[in-house]
Amino acid sequence: MTVRVTATEVKNVINTDVATSILTEHVEVASRFVDDLLGASSLSAGRLRDIELYLAAHFCALYDVSQGMANEREIGTARDRYDYQSTLGPNLGMTRYGQMAMTLDTTGTLLGLDTVKTGGKKALFRTFGTT
Image (cartoon, rainbow, N blue to C red):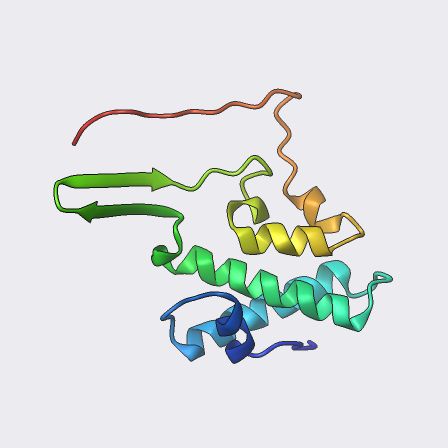
């Protein structure tokens, strides 16, 4: 396994209070992911490093609930509640970091992972109500 980035570098990309040991785990997962899916590609070492950085941030964002996946904020009597929605798909498209990784991957491999097979139709479900 070739680890290309550090937990500190990931913290420079994503504002998180996640412990360095947890970030290191996300870096290792991202590294294996890049090695397995893109290691034999024609992408440069620098490009693979960039993709690994944003994949590690993506995994951290999924782990860290404060990163906006599902959030609720209250200020006085006003309450704002939302869930992250992506038009790019349910996987890497769920975070801006995963979206960046897909953009950096000019082979299209990561974008292909995010393709949802729905018979050509997209469904969007929204729920409204009070608590």
